[in-house]
Image 1 (spheres, rainbow, N blue to C red):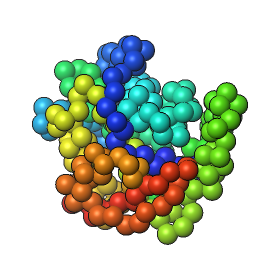
Image 2: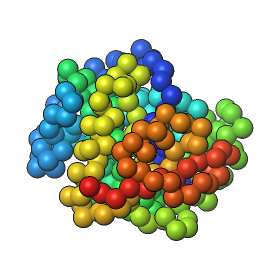
Image 3: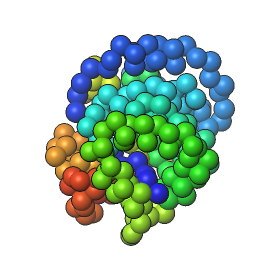
Image 4: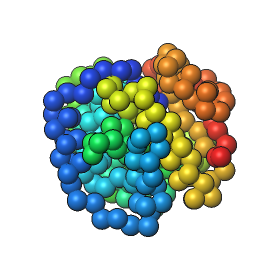
Length: 239
C-alpha cells in the first residue's frame, strides 16, 4: 500500500486557487471538541488545532504547492484532499493546521500506525483515489515507475510504526515560527497517544528540511531509494 512519505518542500508562492481555498476554510465553521482544544494553543503567534474537513482541502493545496516535485503532489489536489480527509478521520491518524490571522498557513499529518492508516484510507476511498491517480498517471506516463514503487512501499522495519507523514508551510509564512509550532503540537499529539518514537522520510536533496529536523533533535536512521530518488529516514523520541 502507498504511504505518504514527505518532508518540507522548497519555497514557492501559493496559486490563486489555493489562496481562495484557504480563505474559505478559515471561514468554515468548526465544531470545538476535546481533541480540538487539546491541540489548540498559541505558539509563536500561531494557533495550532485539529483540522476539519474544509482544512483538508487547504492542506491538499499547500501540499501540492510547497511539496512540488514529489510523487504525491503530481497526483493533484483532488487526490490529496481525499487522502488527508481519510487520514484525519481514522482513529490512528490526524491532521493539525497552523492558523495565523484567521488563515491556515501550514499543516502536519501523522499516524500512530502508518500501515493500518494507509491501508484503511485506500480501502475506504479506493475508487476515488484510483480515478485521480490514474487520471494523472495516464496524462504523464513518467509517473508510472513511481506509482509501482509506491504500491510496494510500507514494508520493512518501520512498517506499522508511528510516522510524521507530511508537513508543509505556505511560502509567505516560512521562517516565522510556524514549522516549530506544528512540530511542537505534533509531538504533543503523539505523546497523548502514548507514542514514544516516530520517524519521517525526507528527500536527501532537501537540505533545508533536513537541517530543520536535525535542529529539533531528529537523527538519521537510514538512507533509502524511494520513488526513484534518494531519501533520508529520520527518527525522534517523543518529548
